[in-house]
Image (cartoon, helix red, strand yellow):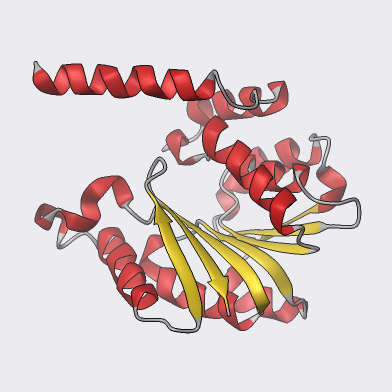
Length: 218
């Protein structure tokens, strides 16, 4: 009973938060619904709260070039592109080519399609070949390779550039010993431990949704 009351309280608080922030654009609302209907693990999409935060972070940082690792349904890419200046560009990589038929039409049908380059491929090998020094990056790809992805991103990120890493609390699995043998949980733990010891950057973990880590390259 106590757990039910706590969950109900959390749901009520979530509703309160969403009713007191910038509203979710209608196009993104439809995309989020479609993601949950037609794609496995639809909740992986950023959603209303995180989406508005990503847009605001872009407006605060004012990056010219953003790198995203892990497009999924395109929700987060569209949110970040909304915050870009007119000459800004976002390059989003999705390694799973089976998602292209869903994601590409939603990106190309958005009002910010001209600011987004959607690329099917492995960002770890392909992003450095773009020859771009990025101002900001959003990491939301394969959790098992987060450390490798992070090192790649850091190598092509400008000094004072920012990285946002998603899912860094992993539904609390990072402190749950019953997930010790889960490879994705291991990947997130390794990333968090690696980052904690990395003096090349400043970092802070936000307990937002599934955990969001903000990182600044010194």
